[in-house]
Length: 79
Image 1: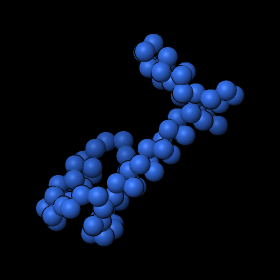
Image 2: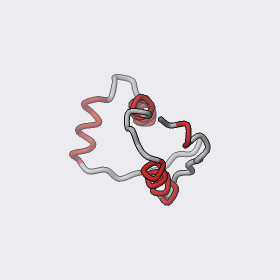
Image 3: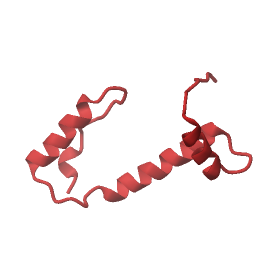
């Protein structure tokens, strides 16, 4: 497995240490936090009553962001 180095401020490090579980690696912590984020986002889908234009604007913004591959399929099913 490869690894990457990232730089974070002391403030961020201290906050991460407060929520990091004993015997949990930082990689495991990040994966846990990302899973929590995903669950929160999934629960929010359908919470907004958006027009087709509004949905299109959100998808256009997401598709223009670098570093992530988004698929637009199923966008019309979001209610």
